[in-house]
Image 1 (cartoon, rainbow, N blue to C red):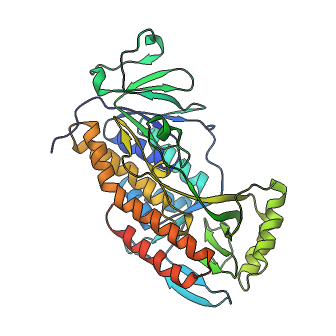
Image 2 (image 1 turned 90 degrees about the vertical axis):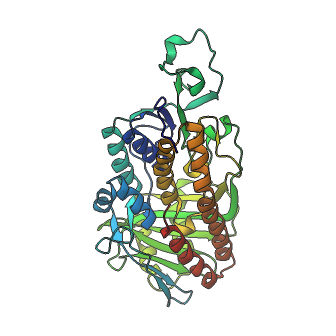
Image 3 (image 1 turned 180 degrees about the vertical axis):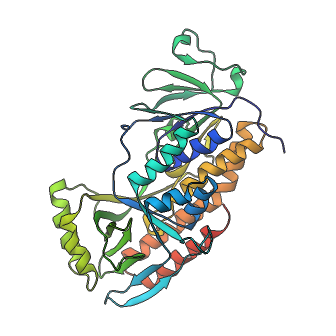
Length: 392
């Protein structure tokens, strides 16, 4: 196996978890990386997420696990509570970064974004905001655009031509689409998939952390599913999966009162969570969508990663882990192969089964939740944690 010795220039579309991780991993391999992010420069807003063991393991390879643990809340148990408020089971995911460190961590999205962005910039990555990809092609004979075009000393046939939304053009060795489940890059590369809606809306609300919430708690309801994930010593987020509902939007002013209504039927500890919702800094409601890109994940020297290629339902808490792993594996495989194209082929070969299995299992779990078959869903979630504990 050879190693890549061509032009090391890349445009990454999207400054989320996948994009920032991929940019950092590439920059550490000597790539000159530019991120195009359509959003503003402020840190990502929103509630939070769970960094499972595979997430922490991948972040540890980048030397960032401890920074994330310091910003978040380390934990090692997932507690399932049945419809009567009684303990159903307790899952203890493997500690993949050492017995003295937690199995997983809850972290606020803005905090994770700050850690990842700070490292990317420290590695020399340029992050441009208010701009995204507008066109992509493999033809490099374009005259009259030199004043807008970043030139490279290598032969044109090694490069991919990327036109950004501000009219500037980049001729680079690699284009990475990390722009989410509704990826524009995916379409521009001629790769097609349609996100699927699963009849569920997920609610999340930032609240003060209850003292008993030292791990993830999930509560089975007669209709819906609720839970809490700690994010720090002070904060947590409450979640609720609303089943059997049409995909729609509600006015912001109705979100907190509606969430309180949905939490009312749950017994026990959920009563305390419900009482905290009026104090929430933010309540959001999003559809449960999944996607998996069948076939090729790349065309020429352009590739999609993260949710643009594979978006699991949130029930398995694996989306962030898959995205972070993608960035590391992508940089590694390109470095191990003589051409970018060969590296992208190897990347997809290595990731397809792992990511496809997680997406498929998450869809099954979502279906079991809709049917209130929680005792069948719990073992599948535990199996996902065991599966993801295997090397990426």
